[in-house]
Image (cartoon, rainbow, N blue to C red; front, top):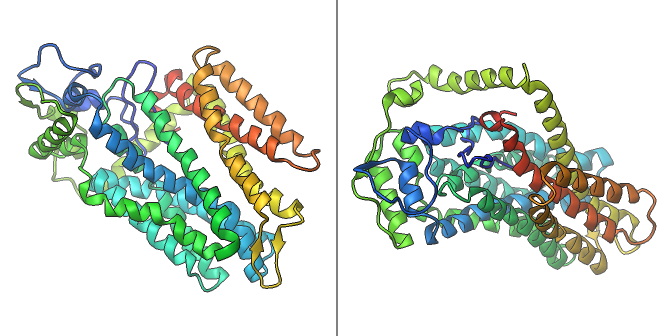
Length: 450
């Protein structure tokens, strides 16, 4: 999950190649970003940042939140789907535990492989095209997974689904580049809420169709949000930041005019200002860059950033944060997969029937759905305490609560829904707090690299 604004309100939206643009407002506007709201004395020329802040948050941003939130919802559905797909495929093809686990592992391998590739496309050809490409890719192989004729084909298709899911951060960049400076952290939490919504939808969908229609229908229906994204794609504009950085001043101005019209306001007097060529990176200031330079420049930048975060005073902080992020990811996805696994292995109503199909009792499916809804109170818990207790204490309390809940699962007998619910809520609270805390330790410029 991508970055967030730092404590000082600086835009640290990650570009989609993995490089963080902590100074995007300086790069584009030649100075710090203004607070959201009308400018008191509109200048004769204005930057993209000033124009977006002048337009403010309105109907256009709500529409962008819904559109990009749909991408997060689809991503969460694909991840939650893994907890049902493995056991179902095991029943149909008589898989061993290691073969069943590979269905999940291959998706994460694909996600790691695709993250940078899709980001590079978004930087080179635009956020809009990068967003569409990753949605099309994931949708295509998601549907093909539903008709996979064998275990080997399913593994092949799920790898490519994972590769497509690696491009989801493009939607985050797309969303953040239309947001005014003020309040970006709040809207980041709103975007995260769509992840929780997707998890709940997938659990509810499994409750409705898994027993009656089977896992193939579940895979196909889970691809609907991605299909909807592509249907609405013609309405999506390119971000004015990317257009200006690539020399299309007229295109950027047209997008800003459209934003202002939808929000019911007017742009400030004057005209959009082209950024100073000296402020741009070499690959932005000239179109005559060789393809070798274009390909290697991001890798060289990442190598320099890795060297910086692993040296000097940043080393200890980086390693501690990496361990906390690793712990959160391990526990969160572990609990997601464990939710279904526990209900299928310990319930007398769950298992493989004589026809080679997975059967999960309605009560067990209801328990899985209830457990998935735990993420919402976890987010609320974090948002209420993060300022009252502070970032570190809220993070510590969340992790301790999660640890206690998951440890209790070792000894609990009978229903484990309450402990799974508490663990999911606590780890989501920890995740939400971590998104706020990490930029505030002054690693904003290197956050995405970390």
